[in-house]
Image 1 (cartoon, helix red, strand yellow):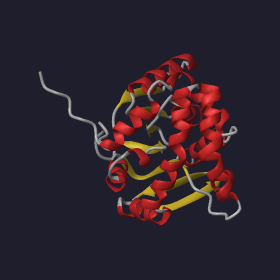
Image 2 (cartoon, one colour):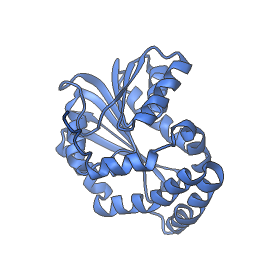
Image 3 (cartoon, one colour):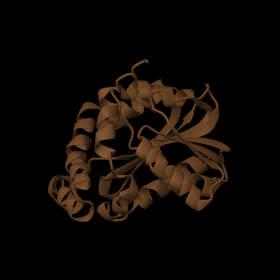
Image 4 (tube, helix red, strand yellow):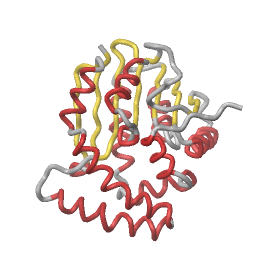
Length: 242
């Protein structure tokens, strides 16, 4: 019997962080973000919908929230991919509950999508790059599967740039979020709350926003634009495949 390859370190972190969270993920994600998560998702969907796609890949789909919103908004067929089997199973349950025949869910890594070159009209990805070992190569892989002219859009946490809001963000992510996670979701969500702030800070220390925009452009994505949201705690970025 062949031994399954060991996942890269970034993928292992993702699996450890999200283990056991799928069942309550959507509800607690809204509570702990003060209902900003839905605003960020809506902005992401707006960016993708502007291209009137017929077939969309939604990478790091999680519980399929973005995938369901995309098909409802555009009528497109959406294929959601997620590394974590538990999240993918919850996503499939959500799709079936919504009777969304236009959405399919599969387990796959963002770094190695099971899609041919230039095979989808658009691609969205959410909270992905902090869990991969080579963000530039991952961005290039995501761009690979999008047809020329198709929109690529990303939702990610961010560090506020304001000298007023950044200390408050730091306080929230280091103290309030872990405690709130513990009180509302138990130890698994306390673990997530403790992980997020340092993870976000470390990611942008290693890969500043200017670097990310440049990586998109090197991957063949043009017209790159971004929108900071919720006092800088979230960011939506989008561009068009050349």
